[in-house]
Length: 184
Image (cartoon, rainbow, N blue to C red; front, side, top):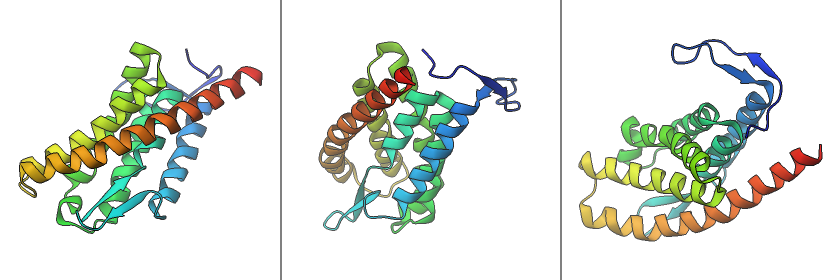
C-alpha cells in the first residue's frame, strides 16, 4: 500500500515514464539529507580500530526510504550512502567504487521487495542490512583486499550488530511514520 496519493510526472526512469509522487521525492530528499548528515558524524560510520573498518548505520535511511518510498527512493538514498563511503574512504577497498557504491544500490531494492513480500519492516531491515554486509564483504573478498577468514570475522561481528540495530530503528521509524500518515 502506497502512502502517496497525488502523483506528479518526474520524467523517464530506466526507459519508462513512471510517475514519482511529490511525497516520494520529499522522502528521498529528506532521507538523502539525513544520509549526508550521518556520513559527516561518527554515528554514520563507527570506527572499529582493531579491524581497520567501520560499523555503519548508513544503510538504515536506505531501508526506510525503500519501505516508505519504493525501490527508486531506496536506490537513490543507497547511492548517496555509497558515494559518501567512496568519498571518505580511509582504506583502499572503499576507494574502489565496486565495493563502496555497487552493493549500496542494491540495499533499497532488496529491502523494498522483502517488505512487499512479507509486509514486515523487520524482515526488510534484516534483508537490507544483510545485503549491505554480504555485498560489501563479498566484493572485498572477490577483489582480493582481505582473506576469507577476515571477511567472515567482520561479517559475524558487524553483520550481527548492524542487523539488530537496524531492525529496531527501522521498525520504530516505519511504524511511527505510518501511524502519523493515518492520522493526517
